[in-house]
Image (tube, rainbow, N blue to C red; front, side, top):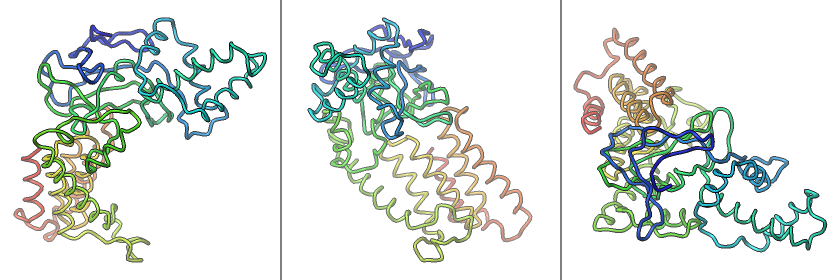
Length: 371
């Protein structure tokens, strides 16, 4: 779709298209900004070409047969879009093809297992599966879980330091938003695996199924060693923070009583706030960064630093609005409201807040300045 317009399965076009889709010298198609794009702006809104259950749902119908039904029901124009999508694998494994052949034969549409018509259908379904495996997007909405294939969204290339993030609403519509300001002509990228805090070798394993080598700044370039050090730092911090209760407001629980988790102290809260800064230095701005704000806010609440907790909850909400949009940031809005209520409730107590110059308060204020 070289003109850059976005048309979903419903046939409607998105009026606002600050991008174009074009071929690149080495990565196939890619999405590029045709104007300056502000942080948090919705770049793309798209309905799926096909939606089908995930392979893990255990439906009575094998997922590849559900995919066959969905593709067969497409309009001629949407079917052409589907089969125009990239396949990163030329053939399915022989054992898997045997299972697909058996499933096709059991539909009763073919006279015998050696039918030429069955061979032709097997080749068609094989191609559908390979397109699905290359382009499907997992989603989990309030209404259902499964996979969707989005024509324009499928053209976006991967980066371990992406500048955009895609999320689905309850109706499985895809919304692509800018994680940071994007310049005119800059390629718009997403992460294919959302594990961008892992070391380079582990990230490479996560994209093996797409059969390409990532050349983003974190994987290839003059600053890749700096990115690697930051990600190793993130792994160390995450490992330490996993030893603390993620719901410290309970002031204990079975795991704490058994010594398997610890209630956070001031050092843990400061480390959680420092983690936010490492995310920023590494250029990682996806939903996992929202969770770091949430964790730090809860730790501060448990330690009685309620203004710091409000500051960090506010950052969590602001960041979630960038990633998912204000309409889908309800949980961080609740986090912020709870933190504010706790601050108001304790405002009259002389020992409720550790002074306006507490270590945690200053750290949270520094995080706000660095947002």
